[in-house]
Length: 324
Image (cartoon, rainbow, N blue to C red):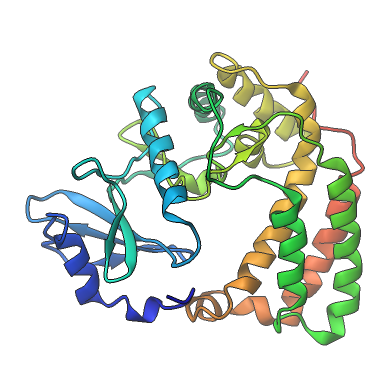
């Protein structure tokens, strides 16, 4: 099955897949904002709300998806509020007509407020608890946060993309090469653990005054700071205060090697390049030109040239420190 065969994922097939594991939708299927996978919310005939996730073909192997699910079950048992897939007869990954899928309880709530220090401290505690579990052993099948995939492969995908205007290719490729070189030099990791991997505000919800962590689809092996740095925003002083607050909760359950603060800007650079590479790689999927049309505009690439130049300068700045 090709990477972009979602056109065969019809509503009837989705409903048949869900019913094949004994869940019977009563409502229609509400598509949720997910471009990597296809995700739908529905209400069952017993008035329970669920989310069905149909995995992108050929992205993850079965053992990688099952390892993600096992990780979520493991951390949930340690009272980390993470949304886990449903199990049927000990299985959480299902298949129907060539499509792999999982079902999750639907969790509503408001988005995490990054500038709310009380929420940051609570989140720090839960990430610390998650990491205390994660440190017990390593992933066997999931990939790592590394420069090969986040920088080298992503750069190749970007430069091969027809979306990059020829008039800007030289300027863009020049600064991209500099960012890749400097980031690779600075991304020196001595210790890795299992991670959520994509811990940003969009994957944290507040539901009935309860924080909920969702979407472990990008869980990887990597440095612990990867699950913390995306919670920092604003100027350097604000980020220092936010970091101090996060770590105040985090270190109740897990210790952070403070030398990893030097990885924040390299990780930021890796995320920037990886995101552009992801869009370029997925451009054949009709959902991407439809929802990310700006990716093929001169204005976007001009902005990325500027952003990469600014990030190149940030890579030379001293590491972020705790708020005094």
